[in-house]
Length: 208
Image (tube, rainbow, N blue to C red):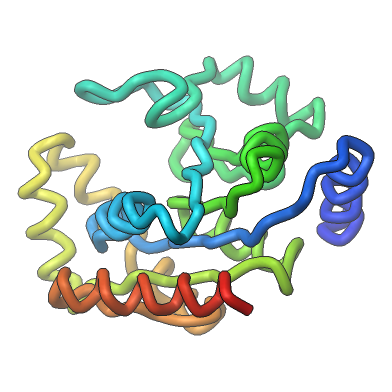
């Protein structure tokens, strides 16, 4: 099924259920760039009428993460079965056997509430959503000031092993190279400035 066919399919399901479609706000970046912090800030701004799209993943929960709040945690078999069932709007094998994706039902559920959808997803998933819904989607790439700062932030998290951090850092240059494919770039050198820039971009897009 092509990207356009999939978009039409999701639109038709929404229309059948009398669901008014909202906007799609995509934030993507290499791990450690600060996109999650920005998305959480925007979700607190009630006037934006946003709801977070919870992604599905085949990886195990970390720390205090909860199923249905941080991710929908699926077994590898469950995730692959959902791929076969065409249940995802987008999906990606980000690392070996670590799949992430957006369930179509998640977007439909948020639209049914009359809200706009905000995503915190990898660059491949973000670009797929933009291609499928070019007019409804604002795609934002969050860029760290440099790779050294990215490494520092990943280590400061204290959540992952050195090997895992090295994997993320090795992937970062390829992810950074996709930045020009997004609608706009927010450089997160100073968090306060990045939050203001992101708010203005999203507020203006929703008002169109």
